[in-house]
Image 1: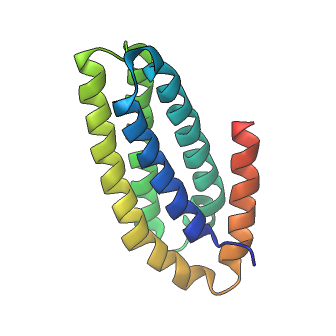
Image 2 (image 1 turned 180 degrees about the vertical axis):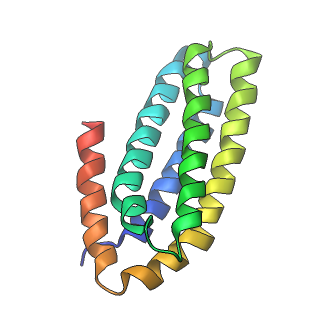
Image 3 (image 1 turned 45 degrees about the vertical axis):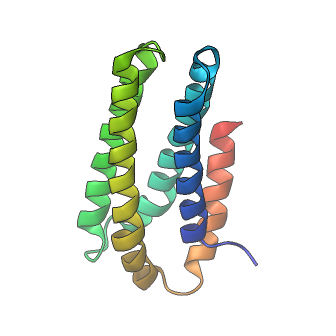
Length: 145
């Protein structure tokens, strides 16, 4: 049976946090490469999530405000990622900004998983989450290859 979009996104969230930890632990000589991998995975996740789940929920009154907030949170984290990309990974500013990204992502993921997903389950019904999961996986794979 196909995995639904919620279980896929939750697994993706855990992987992004694992990669954040990996950036923190990486040797200075490897930190840029690990960060670049994290940035690629984050971009693919947010774009596919926006196109597949957020676009589907945006016009529903139950989810609209949560979707709009989520999109703004994506925008803020993306902006800080772009700033991080311009910094040396061994700098103090890099470490500070990475900490801020982690906290913003923690808040965003918590809001998504505990506010948006329950609303989305009501909106989508029983079968659509599996269809959206397949669409998300296909779109995400297309972005990282």
